[in-house]
Length: 367
Ligand SMILES: [Zn+2]
Image (cartoon, rainbow, N blue to C red; front, side, top):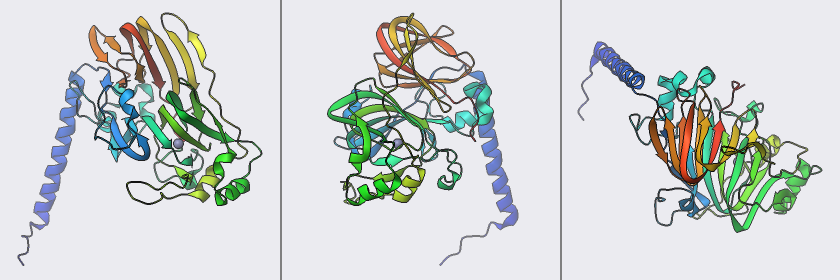
């Protein structure tokens, strides 16, 4: 066997320095590029995820075809700053840049005054197509640190219903009298669903799920906004066999029960607060410490975004053009746009009507 030549300690150090210098110059070049280009609304490519409960209905929500012919697509991640799943800018001079690179190289321009709080983008945005049923699950709160891996946060999330099937059901919360012991017995007799509060959703229903709320979904398509966290504890998975693996998925019953808030009331859709009716119907759906969501519905021309503040726009119906500094950026149904703080406020124009969700980032730092 031939040994590889030993390049020696000095040569190794030189090689390491050369790599670091290359990385530094790459970063400098990127920063210079970003300083030169005018900022614009950043569109991101969706990232599709197989889920055993998924289907093909996201094709009706997005303007681009779904990958594969019969793959069960359960989730399209619209904005994600997670190492295993990084969103990339779809077009313009910054095409191909990841959200993590943008935050690292231009935090102020992207996130404005709150940039210093965030090591990574604080929210995760998704569309879900739950054809079958989502596992019955619980996410920990920011305070339940014993259940959070390093650098993870808790997960408060919210849904806006986009399609409601014939068997549609939203499971969220419990009767306040239900205890952990009741749920343990229900798991043993496979009757957990009987203990969950639930309702039949209508299109447009908006549901806020504070971390610690037990929840599931059935036969619906929803938009989902959540804290950037991937900590989920499955209490029950409806005895389902994953068609891809031929096995049941793992449950984390003890962790789920430990993170579940008792007593817990039943969750129902929020009552939207009408903030304006002209030049666009502007309804506030949620405003909590982790995110705010407004629904904008109208036509013609109206302002979107907020001065010197990063905002996200998700087009759930229609399409149009964003106008900023006399430049125009077309968008279609199903697309997500990040308005960098450097842009802040712009104008939406549409020849017909459009429905947008405008999402704000948390204003205070994580704990
Ligand atoms: Zn969840």
